[in-house]
Length: 176
Picture 1 (cartoon, rainbow, N blue to C red):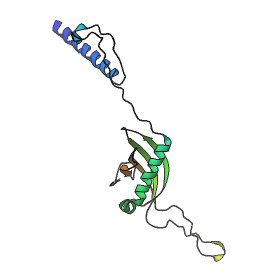
Picture 2 (picture 1 turned 60 degrees about the horizontal axis):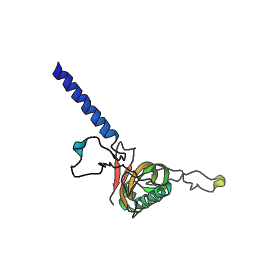
Picture 3 (picture 1 turned 135 degrees about the vertical axis):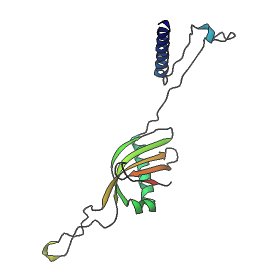
Picture 4 (picture 1 turned 120 degrees about the horizontal axis):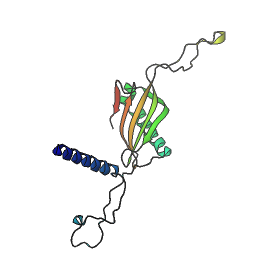
């Protein structure tokens, strides 16, 4: 009986220790007074100072994200393999998100329209027997989700993936 109570209290103390440790993991704390004398060195006269580090995420502005998206679009338009497999990138539809997962890296995600194959022209007859119109109607267009990483300092495209059907099927990875 005593052993189970001791085991439970030891487990509870361990849980509290872990909770306190992880709760203060990413905040900066400076301890100037420590009551436990055993932690100090015998020759040290000043109080023990202990500091933990704070995790800082880099902030990305909309302008930086827009320039990163432009560089990714240019890289996809220049690549022959991307044009052959996906089609010509005609426009970006909407920006889904941007940020900085690691310092010096800009990550962007956006939807883009790729046009592959025919002209996408309709054969609508013109009035007065003037022939047929050459109006684009958007046939042969595929919208894919583009996920890319760009170096913030140099502007070099590091990684590009295009998901054709929201990532559930085939995707295209640009070789950079």
